[in-house]
Image (cartoon, rainbow, N blue to C red):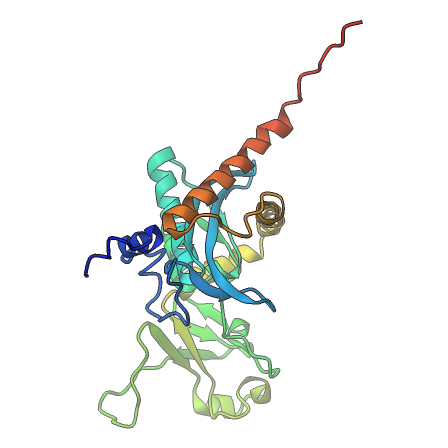
Length: 294
């Protein structure tokens, strides 16, 4: 990579220094639609039903029991970067403060298979809605209606029939390759043909087929947690967290940044988080009473 010109803006130099970081240059291989010449690390994005603009994302790691911001990370405004920053912050607070959370509360954007698997392997309970596109809206049974039998490596349909793992015949040239990290499960054709619930299951196919992703075990853990009482408590706590971001924009006026570049965005986010944390003791401890002289 060539060195930037000596008269290049500071934001441009900072971006070139962060090309290999997962939060900025290496956040995605997708070429952005537009690039800012004065601040190329920012992301061209649009809010719901709003105009598009260049922006950064502010990600907080918050102690929900006390409402204290533990760590802050500035990233490009894309999902991959925001999710990746969570891993960065969790590792950082572990190394710096020896903090290891029992659970992580987040929205659906963080409910992808790889992210859930990363949390489960580190014994962090994912109180996160699963990012799943397997649901059906045509009235037929979706994958969630089938029970997973891990001991026998099979799915059980609502009628009690088993869907065994489909093994591809490599000698048959007409069979396409199985996707990487995807296992296919299929019921017997004659079983489905004689099933009284075929129209609810596979009305246009001879037999029902189901795919299981690589990190489906971690998704199942998150689905099981969602049925617990603690998950309902976590959902209420997440609403309180959203108030910090509303305060960030409306009260502290951080809807528009004053500094450019990754370092500038991170500095502003860090200062804003510090100000929000300082409000906590100001609310807890009462102001000293002033005595008046007669």
